[in-house]
Length: 248
Ligand code: PGA
Image 1 (cartoon, rainbow, N blue to C red):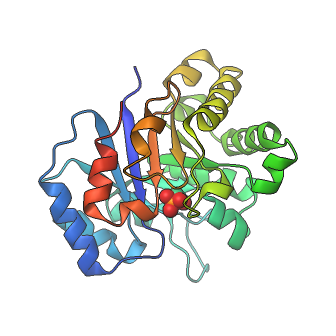
Image 2 (cartoon, helix red, strand yellow):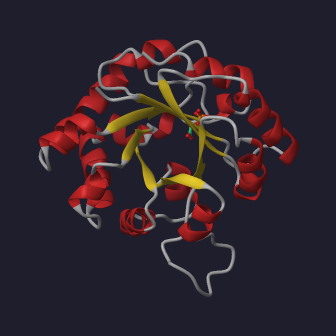
């Protein structure tokens, strides 16, 4: 049985004050059925870590460098994220792919850095609206998953998390409906079974793209949707907690 997981991706939003407020709000809540991960902006990780000491909430980086260290101005290494208390790192988010040139190859290198540091990658995949309209969804997803797994060994694959985030649903308020999302989640699970049946059965596959308090439960009720990667709705403590409590 896969344990569900909900991750909040703040993107480049929120102040130190709002980070501390969320940490305080989460500190009072016990999440029995789900693992909860928060990815605040990197500068707030330290404050979140201190404020979350009593809570059962994990921290994630929103991205990382594909390099270990060196002259890469502006970048954050996986080892730095680990020092800041992260257990997870989001890799291959569509905004990184779209605005910062993260190719499949670069995503694969980042995944291997995350794994080598002993952290868990949350690997994002998803098709654009144009690709969906051209019936390319399956091809795009399989290509992205295969590339992301290409640089890591079999044991590491077992700890990874995949997030299916259709690009057309991110930040648009137009979520995929549960059946649409389930179809792609099953496709990903079937694809993983080509590597290994245990991997396919045990990998948690999250849905992301306009998850809100009022649609989370119906999405999470689908058999192959193991939780969510939540953007906008994770900025508000009440709605994020509601979403975390909506897991099946
Ligand atoms: P959204 O973002 O929930 O605001 O659509 C999801 C994401 O990009 O991870």
